[in-house]
Image (tube, rainbow, N blue to C red; front, side, top):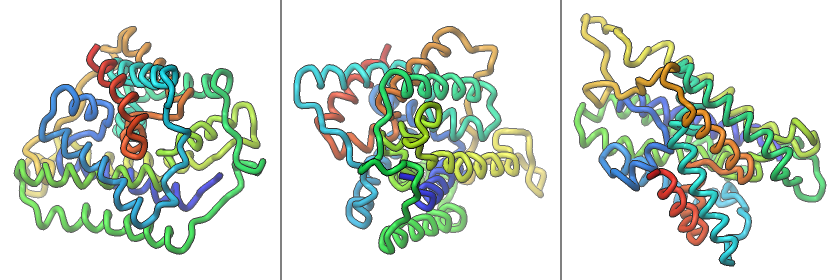
Length: 329
């Protein structure tokens, strides 16, 4: 169902966490590279973020359990386990070969005016759109209600969502710059916080719900199944990130009032992708297409897959085993 308030507040959390990681730690919030890094090359740059993402299930479960999606049943046969592992393999290979997913390319890349990310997003979004409509099929909403019918949060859920958004804004904008110094310890702590914030944002926005993601693609074939919620992620997630990037211009030759180069709040330098459009090859294009196919079939990308793995361990074991194998090739 259309969730304008949920998704708007969740998108603001996605914006705040990803932009704060850029401004304070100088790094891009690309979950696919962070996740494969945790599995294949763990470090203080990736482990804390994924740990925060995993632990985001706890506050949602305790204070707003209705935000947790109703997932399809976990695999319980050999065939379903193999299918889930295969999907994980393709997800891992596709995001590694395409150098990113919805977070790194669509949320962070487009907002940094990366032509490479714009191309990748166009490829995997188009592929997912066609796959969802003409291959996998899009699930209807319960009781035959049109999916574009708006629904609004309960008072308790609204209080949780607004409170989380406000606390995140205050923490990232005022507390961190004043309390933490430029050190590895500070970056590690803040990395965990951004992972926690991003995970809660995925739950609130609806990006963690595979059925909701698939219903967003229904505008091409079945208006009754179309849920426009995720368009608000563009409005309240990508647009503010773009404005922040244009104002701060991280990684560029910009100086402060004292004539010194602008640095991240907690780091000595920026760690931004340097690849260009000229480096796009067949593997990049094919990887983006494969990721799009998996996204259109299952409605799952790496970030939501991490959250679902906590809630459905059997599914997570099969999915992440395949993902690790795909990411290593």
